[in-house]
Length: 316
Image (cartoon, rainbow, N blue to C red; front, side):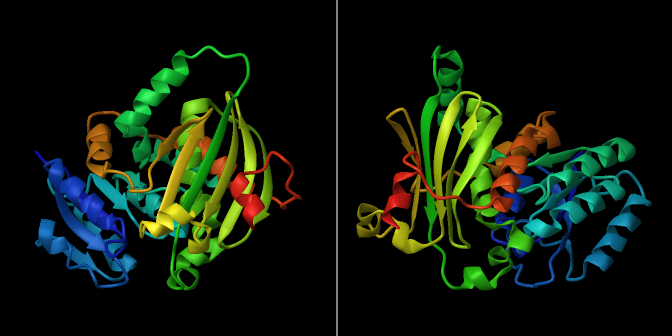
């Protein structure tokens, strides 16, 4: 029997990937919610799904299904809403007896993780988060290589993530730190998690630049020293990238070896769903170190950069 899914944040950028993943895994979307009604994408996958623009009515519908029968209840709630609502929508999932599959960042404030873990136990349901980069085959192979390496010192890693955004960005919830968590949580946490997965838990962190449109600093992991630079300012793109008409530059360089992802990543959400439904999935504890690091970076006071700063910082 297929599982029943509901989805909150149906009008968001990432929602189509979740809709496709639900369909690809042979399951059914029975209800969706978003305060905006530009959700015609649902017709491509689940035209029979109920739709709500008010979360209160959505909540009531899910609760009604919970009290109906096993065949009617919602088994999973997919969460694609703005970052600051993730915590509340995970709680909604658990309360109506569903597992949560939540986009990152799972929460903005790390202390909320303990509360969600407690609710997992109370409701006997799981909270999963989308860490799709961990499922990218070339990065899984890199992890095997790193785990097999024997080295005396730490790896030298340089993370550069520039993804240009227009004026709308600052006006939207993404441009409000209290709602998005700022650059560290809105775009940086993807790569912070990846590097922690590859090189071990964080040990220290220093921030050299902290602006709404760009941030930079350095942090130490168990097996690596990471210089990082994040930006949504198109003028920070390397000249060669701009010449090619590209709007993003994503690079991880390790001891001279570079992984360049400027063309983006394959859609791995279906793989994430298959992993969850197969008994795997990434948990609260998997995501905790990157949430804590991003929060520490977000709330840090920037200090004067030293010679170990990211080279892009010297260009400013």
